[in-house]
Length: 214
Length: 214
Image (cartoon, each protein chain N blue to C red):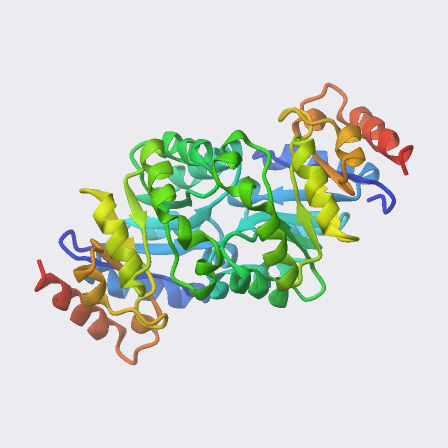
């Protein structure tokens, strides 16, 4: 992994062999690797431990359950060696607080707005309130859409020095340079890298483009 | 499993051996068994297939991701033999619609209100809108709190003939008979059963008490 990189690889693959090779190939060029439930359901939970051997792993679990269940999930991914975890804030402060308490040294990022069209049905209208809930719960940083610059700028303005990680780059229409310019600390990129004919080259290019902005 | 029962067992255990024995012991007295992420992270995803051999399994995944990720998760639990799946509606109609489309014959229940205190920070204020989003997405039924009769009655009034399943019974303060009286079709009970000195006896008593209400 690369400590100075602003790139997070979204490992949204369900072919386990391909996912592991991709993780190993891209790891030198990114800050962390984000895994989510589909790969866990295909490879089993040990995939978290396996990737944690050579990279920071952010478990993008979009946790949205009652406090006790959130706690049990977080305790387990912490055991498996994850570096960070993503949880929802809309379920309320107590549920998110349970995540933060169980996380220990793990970094907790809370979702305060999302990148898909349906997010505007309800969720994205409340990003101010979701930031308040998240701050009171004691999270480390926020997840905010990299393909919605207006919303991202508003969240940046309220986030102070807290970290923002942004999905929605590439396949969902966002651009990594614009996302960082609008306030993202790290951009999360998946399909744009692993669907490329030369994924390492694309990852290196994104990494270099972002490092020139520092 | 018991087709006429209104009891759903919440298998909120992380000790895999104990969870499987509990599932087998209680299965004759309940309509379905609800599993969630903690047991999947401890036992691996195959636990869904294992319990599906002798019971309906509802995967309480509280899905709350973008459409493509929701779809990948649902396709996998369907392969594993689940009977039903629980998803959030607040992330928007497109995300929930992706769940319904990938579910095929599986029943999709959407969360329109929750049972923990923090649910009133934001989520539970919007149950009317969440029901609308859910109906447009084509879900089979709703998850609504069995320990909040006022909210449950309001949801029942808008739900028409759609099924409502209700957690929050026992440890979270709800009562199974009151929950059914307020509009639940099925009640979800966990700790009250598996923390009892005689879990089978407690499950049979709940099952009988509810069957007398039919």
